[in-house]
Image (cartoon, rainbow, N blue to C red):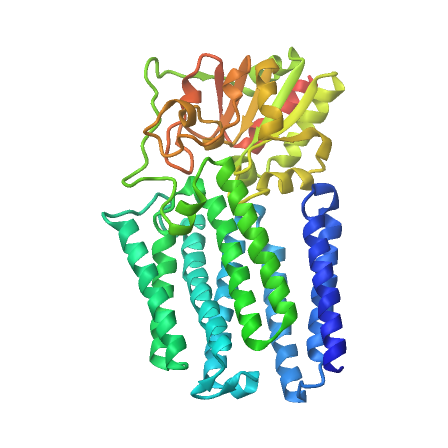
Length: 468
């Protein structure tokens, strides 16, 4: 396949990637979007393998690499639990960043193989592209590893902060910029290349450790954007249009999603980029729970009785639902309520779970109709007219402290205003705080009844009581 045909194939693949992103923007078209993305990637891979400049040995190595990586990816995708999907995504992002670092190192050591010059005489524009891909890739690699460790509970999910942290990050950022300039001016010094790599790896670590659990969905989105820009930078270095377009699409879409997530959490996008957002320092501050701290404890029978006498029930799923895999039992409960002419809706917070869209995927897996699922902006004004709100495993996204306690690390974050409903049924294993480490004031409200136990088991018991 000559260069013109290869370029045309890459163009077709790029169009399919754009259509894939468009399809992924809505649940009803997401399956088609995934299919278009797979087809586009298949075309890009075939175009690369059939390119006239590829040697037989090179094709064999690529096929071997794709086979090994594809096998590992397939096994991981089949075995991974839905609750562990966020950390899997973080791990994949780290690999993209590491790949960018390796490609940059290869281009520096064998520039003639990439058509970017010769050793010691690399094209200026290639040095710029190479250094950007290296720096962003290294930050993505270590940052994603820290995100994975926090999501996998291999390290504390609470913010890790110290005095002068922001100044240190700023200083290191300036130093990284200077090193990149020196690397470009030097014509490709291997010592400066190594210095840029080490400093960028350190920055990735420092940018993510101060970020608390409540903000991890934004971190996943932000790292997704970083991995895209790293890929785009390396695409310019090796002159691969498909990599440039794909990386730019991932980078820009991830950046837009990060902005949307920050807006949904009342966070500053600049603080996200600098690291340590969501907490000014120190440990998480518990929500204020002044007054009577006793709670009302109910049973599945109590919950079923209250729901039977309701005309409108809103269900708020959270990470606890994902952990117990209660989505199927939840849909069954909703079906029983609908059979009694009770209006049932689902309310989804943009950061419920551990990554954007986590709850939507789980509900879709259980066959919940998209027409019954509503985002925060649409559903929030309906809680006041709801007879019952069934909160299953959600915590921080329903915490009134976000509106009432300025000292709380989640203060200012828009929440689902479930406290306005006549009755709130809150399913939890215990009185433990949410992922952000903040106590939930809602537990102690007069209109809240706590249902302690496994989310799936409790929901199944409620279904049994409703049927009797």
